Image (cartoon, each protein chain N blue to C red):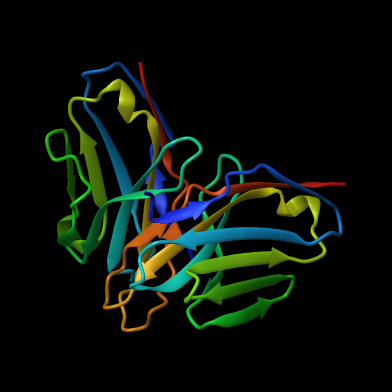
Length: 112
Length: 116
């Protein structure tokens, strides 16, 4: 079983809607959680990180973490066509290890 | 400030040939990573350096892959001989090593390798 699971999609939402991206992880030692956005043919770029249970908001993006359920999500409000990309969930264990474990990503398409 | 630089951006070789990729991290970043990304998959770590020391190379196929980071700055990843299954994007990333649980990794543009 892969350590980080994501629905590969594609997820299609209309412009202005809320896009909800989900991720589950198997390693209970995971302490930090990251969402990367990757446009087609480009490299991943960090958009959100979270390490405490609950919600973290940054502009139109909200990350949600539930460690008991081993679940991380990303909500994108007022979705724009420019949000169309693959969203990668990644986890990192505590203790100085810098290893990120990525899911395979969810492809999001926002339709004008 | 310049980002992570990688070269070449694209490489096409025949199987059994050698190939090398080069990475220059962001100035001052002491941690460097090489990732492999297959189509439709997330990046997978091949090797991580802290300064010039390889501290995690458990996922590096050592029979054909090698890497070095001389002087703790630039790094080279080599494949010899290349196989058809090595066709992928090779990403380099760098970060500052610290005590925080959050040390953002910045990715380079990647090298897309095609093995024929």
